[in-house]
Length: 185
Image (tube, one colour):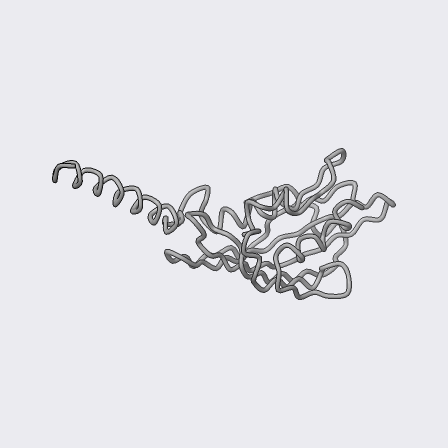
C-alpha cells in the first residue's frame, strides 16, 4: 500500500471514530421543541395523559422518550405515587408503579399553572413547573389535584433524559382546577 493510500485509510478510520465519539457526546438542545422545559411540559401534557379508549398504559412504551431506560439509576420522588413507597432509585420501577393507577382510569387530564423555569447547561438541566390534574376513575370516582414538579435532566447521546424527579401534589375540589385543564400555557 502506498503512503497516500495508508493516509486516506487512516483518515477515514479517524473520521469514523470521531463521528462515533461526537454522536455519543452530541450536545443536547437548550432551546426549542427538545429543550428541557418544553420536554417537561410535554411530559405532563402528553406523557401522563390518558383518554377514554386509549390502550393500556405501559410506562416503558409511552414514557421512553423522557427516561433513560438503559441506565435507570436516579432519584424519583412523588408524594402522590400509588403503593407503599414514594421514593424510587430506578426509573423503570418508578414508572411501572404508575401503570395500575393509569389503567384504572377512564381518563387523566392535566393543565399547567405557574412557576415555570429552567436552568440549562451543556450536560445537565433542572426544570420546574406548576400543574393540575384530574383522574376520572373507571369506578366513577374523580380525583383532582394541584401540584409542583421539578425534574433533573441529563444529556444522554444528544437527548435529554430525566434522572431526578421531585413531584408534590395535594387533593383539591375539581372545580378549583377546571380553568387550567388542557392548558399548556
